[in-house]
Amino acid sequence: MGEKTEFEPGDKAPNDGEYTEVGEKSFVSEIQNPKRVTLQKGEAFPETSNHNRKWKKLTKARVH
Image (tube, rainbow, N blue to C red; front, top):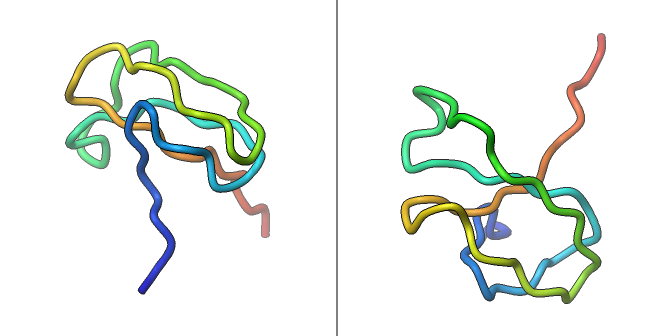
């Protein structure tokens, strides 16, 4: 079983890091002005801009 990658408001952050809102179909079109938060491991995720959004950890792009 893999690690959870999307989180709902009230869930606890699994790791320190910066998280951003993603929409239901974020792989198709980006949402406008997504909220971003920096959380420490164990902190609760805040409310999103609307009920269709979730939180996802930002990842650094790899440079080859």
